[in-house]
Image (cartoon, one colour):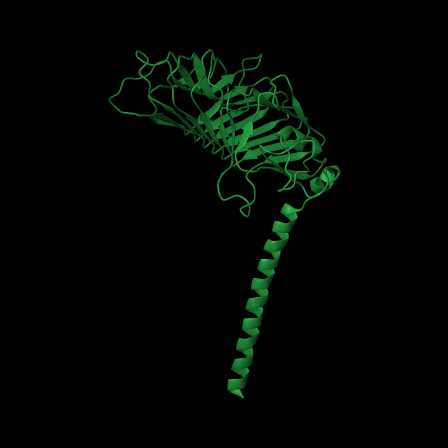
Length: 327
């Protein structure tokens, strides 16, 4: 009897194990088939109910529906299809190449009505590498205004792309764990594209910028100034800048470009206050750093532009050749 009982128990364990394996395989197949489902362009809103849109260089805003196999072309189109009061994920499919005609700097995309937009890398099932958004030539800016809504941008790479983000009333913006590259400027460009500009347009706004890498490289042409992050503190909203890396290469200013670098540039409001801005735990690095090397007096880790009442602590300038803070 004891032997029969052990055998029965073992059989039950085996059955349970294979049921578990079958359930995992079924869930993967269903997820894959859902993402690959072809639907008509008119049913794009149905895809939106599930809260996800794919965008791709070969996508189409007119005939695409946002599915994995029939993606949209632009971020703006995906935002316009998102429904109020729900989370909507926007996934770049592979590396997205921008066109200047699709993102004119004069065009402002508004996120409002309780929308919760999250632009991020696709699920692991469809993306084993971090997608990037790049521009073959300077493509202007993503100009996005957030009012009574949320925007999150995370786990993506950007090259020669500039975000102009406007934090309006009751807004929340999060820029988390991205890699932003600044590359060789073209002739006639006065500053290097590839940065984040945040405008706090209302005191009820909250903006979090954390764990990003602002990487400046390849400085050969003459250029006047560049900064990784600009904050235009028009109203006293909350801006938290924490645990980011600001890195740029050492350049001999007597031999190289006439460049001024600021990791963070703050433009104060009319009252001259930077109240509500918290800058903490960031690292400022100079590639090619040497303790015996000459200081680069034109470069600044944080440029305050006269702003007062800013909270700053535990920022690391130990491998930065410039001046840590300019008042």
